[in-house]
Image (tube, rainbow, N blue to C red):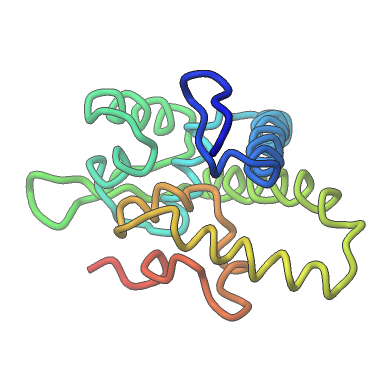
Amino acid sequence: MHQMRGAYYHPMADRLGQILGVTALAVMDRLRAGVAAGAAIGEVEAGAVVHVQAWPGGSVGDLAGVVGLSQPATVRLVDRLVDQGLLRREAGRDRRTVALVVTEAGSRAADAVLAARAEVLAPLLAELSGSERATLERLLGQVAAGLAADRPGAVRVCRLCDRDACTSGPGCPLEHTTRARR
C-alpha cells in the first residue's frame, strides 16, 4: 500500500520521476535563457524560425499547431517575424494560403537558436562516458518516442530540434517528424 502524500500522489512519482522532472525543468530554464541570449529572440519566435527553416512552405495554420498559439496569435507572430526580417510570405498551395519561408536573417537566427541550444546541452552531457551517453541516448529515445501520438504533436515536441543531429544516428525517435510533409 502506498502512503498518500497529498491529493496528487501517484505511484510512478518515485525518485526517478522526481529526478526526471527536476532535470526537465532545469534544462528548459537553461534553454530559454540560452536561446534568449544567443539568438536575441523569444522562445516562441525561436520555435517558429527553427520550424520554418526545417519545413519551409508551411502555412500559418501549420505553424500555429507547432508553436501552440491560436490562429490570430500566430498571424501576429508571423507579422512580427516578417517585420523583423526573419520570415517571408510567399504564394501558398492555393489562393487562400500563404507559404512561410525563412529569410537569410531568419536562417541565421535559426542557426543561432540551435547553436545556443547545443551550448546549453553540451556541458550537461560532458561528464558522461561514451557508454553512458549511448545508454542515456537509448533510454531518452524511448521516452521521447512516447511524447507524441501523432505527427502534429511530434512536430510541436521537435520545434527546437536540430534535425541534422537527430537524424544522423539510428533515426529520430519521433520518425514521423522526418517524413515529407505532403
